Image (cartoon, rainbow, N blue to C red):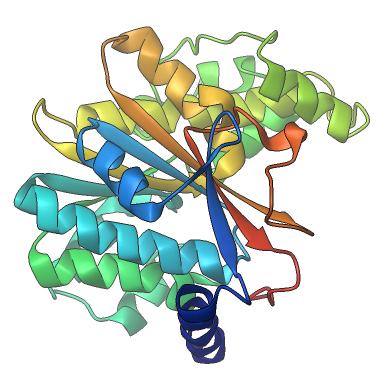
Length: 285
């Protein structure tokens, strides 16, 4: 991973100095080119910022860390971090790591960490540790999403109260007409049936619930998630707006393209800001 970050720094330097090689270009939702400075200015004014990443894109992970640093400069201790990559029943382990009660080796043993956690998400959690920020495990434990995938929402209705504490309050509001859920069914060729988008919805609803539970007015909540969870301001954002339509939410999406000259039409309006990465840039896995 160090190789990728070193190469990224070199290419960004070339981009700035000579404009001969470009790693990325930032666009607004309407396809107009914009700058990181404008993205940051907008993000600073938000209540919540959703960074929709490609999980294997090192440019996305670099951007996440840089944005975190810059938003901390603006918001200080009012900045709260949260991530899809950590599940709600691992919050204690996260808190223990932040307090230095356990080390990384113990965190790895006790929590369900993603395979790329050490390279891509540990730097974010370490930043929270260094500056005394909260880091919220927002996602539903995968075993419950699996239950919904196999048996629909009714499969979690009879869970004991001890299990339901890790899930958004039931019953889960669900709109099967949302384009992202419909697209998911289409992409999978109908595999999984109607329960496939419902399994996605239990994640979205739980993440939204935990974000709101850990947010207070005047704070800035920065959330890291796969772009599908926040694109078109659906997914997590849709659930948040059901509870509090007044929230000022900024969304970011990361995409790859052959050319950085203009934003492909298919990517327009996916987010407030779309970071387009040169498709030839190496993936992290």
